[in-house]
Length: 128
Image (cartoon, rainbow, N blue to C red; front, side, top):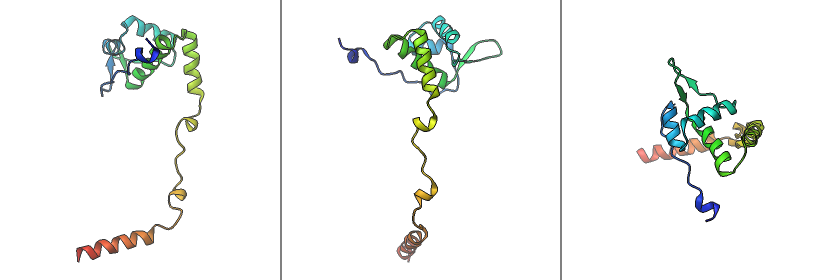
């Protein structure tokens, strides 16, 4: 079998604010102790804790765990290699990752008021 045939699509993350460790464990297909170990190895992963000490993972934590699992299980990185890969991703400026927002001057290079006025007059004529 090829690597492509073995790859599965990432699981659908339910639309919730917080996930318990058991839910995340089931979602990722790993045991809870693996999640606790990853938490100790990856300082970027810091789930909140409830008043009773239970771990509460947010959606971004679950997405990060999916990324960690991908690096460790599918790409066969070591813990150190996965840590370095995540740190390198974090160092890339957000401007380089996301498209540059357009400036208002670019959006309205010409005066939009005459066009708006024509459209409003056309609507008025339709209503007559």
